[in-house]
Length: 105
Image 1 (cartoon, helix red, strand yellow):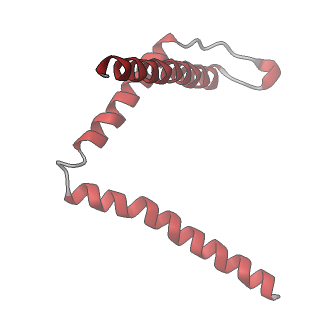
Image 2: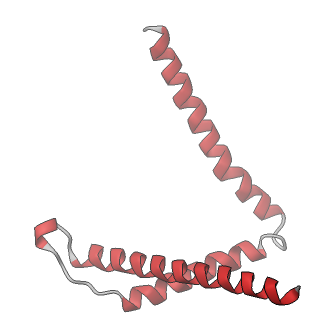
């Protein structure tokens, strides 16, 4: 084994340790501080609710030419509708924020 091979394996190991730490430590923090984590859970719930609503509005057409079945088409359609809704919402909130700052002065 060369020095480069060993370095790559060490890099993979450190990347795995960092990924595990980035996932585990926030979970431990939220488990210890449930009152502070309430807003996080509410945000996740709102996103899941919006995804469920966008899932209702999406279609389940199958595209055999692209090897996309009805289930995958439904999920992709829901994700795109959610993306469009979040994009419009973020632009609207940015505009509202700027306009409200103008009137506060």
